View (spheres, rainbow, N blue to C red):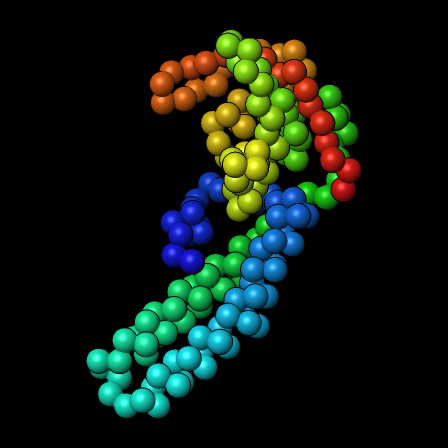
Length: 168
């Protein structure tokens, strides 16, 4: 819950896919309706045991409540400012938000990524933040375009071999 990625940053894209919004709303619902009441009850029970200054369960429970409340506030504010992108772009032959993009590097290795909002990126699932340098380089490009991707180890060239959009 105290994940640095959950903290708002200036210049962060305000777009999200319908699935990403659903995931954030589900997390907010879980924290508010299930997790917070459970922790509140545990704190109440720990407080009933007496001296709170040396009561580890009480101290830990209060810390958990602060973290839950911080995340609930963040999610509530973030969901209010997000724009759900629930339609396909007019030109589906180009890379825009929500596109699945297949790229091939110089070594012939192929990778597939979906350009999503910063609140839903997960590279292990192929979800690439629209704010990342790679996504910014891919935006607006077409199949067979060569793109220079900036990375810490330098610029590498990739070729776009496929662009696909899931229907909303």
